[in-house]
Length: 553
Image 1 (cartoon, rainbow, N blue to C red):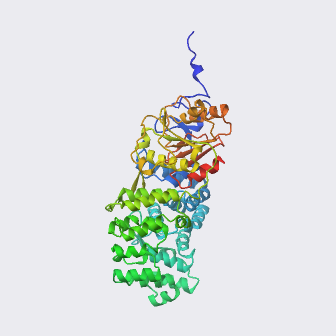
Image 2 (image 1 turned 120 degrees about the horizontal axis):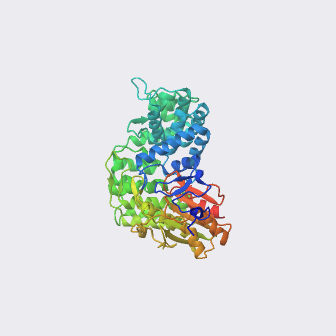
Image 3 (image 1 turned 30 degrees about the vertical axis):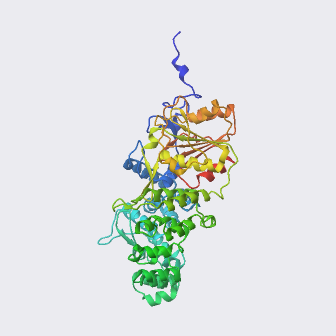
């Protein structure tokens, strides 16, 4: 008897090269040729806001990847601009931050205020001060908005604007107390847009025409535009007084005196003295913990931090102060990022300028590793059993994930780091495996040293993301949840991941949950959107450990 071809149609076990019967309308062909569930517009938008598009993916180049996500932004603004704006605010202002860069959220606001309907533009105006919190953010927004507007004024540097846009720019200077705005203006009076053009708060004043409701605000606006003298500004705005005092220093010794006596931030000091080792020697004891961590490379580059140096000893003591780390709300992921950036010895956040290089001081690297360990003190485990599956296929080696213009490692190495963090939090209740077209033993343990991961390479085969669930079923692993760290480009399995999860639940644990953490902003996922026991997250996100443990609970 000949074989019946209709017998191959199976909604329980379907090859990943085919859509699940009855679910064809919900599935799309991914970039690797397999079928995965299409993400809805809002999930795609959230992925973009968290991950951005820099670097592209293994299957899609950076330019095509960016254009694909720009269309997502346009579609979301057109479909429900208010919801799109609210999502951008949520991603940008979450604590801890959900996105490593604020650029995608600023791009969305620029799109909303340029192309949205009246209600969307008004929502974007309200959101802008929340998202564009610094002059750096404001310069990024200004550049995006100007490029999207596409209609420069004759003979000027800015496009013609409507009332909502003028109001939004004006709000940047009126939504905070005058001295707080003055402090920002003093820290960074001039910036560059993403297109490389100059930007300053004077531009915002000239376009937005905000009203000054108090003598302090009038003094602020007048000082920024050069219409109010320094003496009057000093009397009404303490930040201006401190800034002008700091700017007047003529030698490193005077700078050290201002830092120690008045505690001025390093941004107030003239650029000429910020290249002097003794100035940063004084700043080590006065800057906040976040500023200290962010300036370790600079201090090493100019010679403040040296092997066996006194300044190095003091910096290391601050970095390994458990109480200071807790007070500064320094997350283990923040320390990891600092360690990777500092240890790389190179940073090039702007491709238009030469890379900055330094030779890392071993004592500082060791202190950052100790700080990483200390920063776990307040993290509570879920007390649930967790299987962590790291995608070890070839596509996970293509992209080097970046932070501050420094390489963090391949997507696989970053995924291994996240798995290490979670394994340390959960201790004996977490088990880690690698998967490509087979399951491989992972080298990760709760005590894995971060330096080990630098040399790790994945197995590099194809991708079958049904394996974590079928493996758990075959090995009789009774787990409360499965975390999959992946780029979602699965294609090689004989059954879909969602089908394998269903089979695992039916045989071992009906309440088992699943978290799919996407490490690239692709428009698809292995997660079944109908399954309330599956959570999709995007990005190398400081909230991931808390989200995973909370979801398992």
